[in-house]
Image (cartoon, rainbow over all chains, first blue to last red; front, top):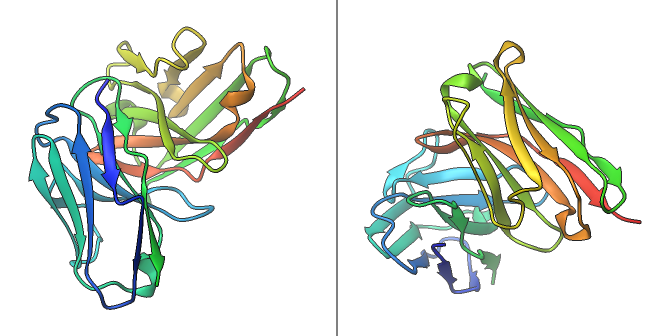
Length: 107
Length: 116
C-alpha cells in the first residue's frame, strides 16, 4: 500500500497570503496524484488531478505540481472560502489511498 | 447536471448488514469507474473500494475486503455497496464518487452508525 504523508498537519495563514501544502508518497505514483478540498457537511471537491491539472471550474489561484513521490498544492492568494481541510490521493496502485489531510485555518 | 445521491444509511447493530445505494443522474454511470469513500467522525477520508467500468473488476481496501461488495445495476443507473459483518469502526459518512479525470463528481453522503 502506498502511504501518502501530508505536511504540515495544520497551516495557519491570513487571507491574501500564499499557501503551500505538501504530499509525499512512500513510492512513486507517477503523476496519478489528486488534491481535494473538504468542508464540514459537504462532499469532497476535486481541485487538481494528475498532479497539475485543474478540475473544471476551479479558480486559477489553485495550482498543483510535482511528480513521482513529491507533490505540492499551492493557493496563490487565500480567499476566506479557502479555509478547509485538504487531502491528496493517489490512484497509481490499488488500493487507492489518501493522505491524512492538512487543515488550513485562519490566523 | 451530473449528480450522485447516496441512500440507505442508518443505525445497525454490530454483525448485521446494510446496503447503500448511489443513484447517478445526468450521466451514465456504467461508463465510469465508481468509488466508495468514507469519513468516520473526526477522521480523514478513507477509500473503501471501486467497481471499474466493465462491472467485473473490483478492488477493496484491506479493512473491508471480504465483508463489503460493490455492484451496479445499469438499468437503474445505480451502484451499490453491500456491507456485511458490520463493525463499530465502520461508522462513517459514506460517499460515492465518479472517476473520470480524477474523482470529479461526488455525492453528499449517507451516514452509517454501527452501535449496539
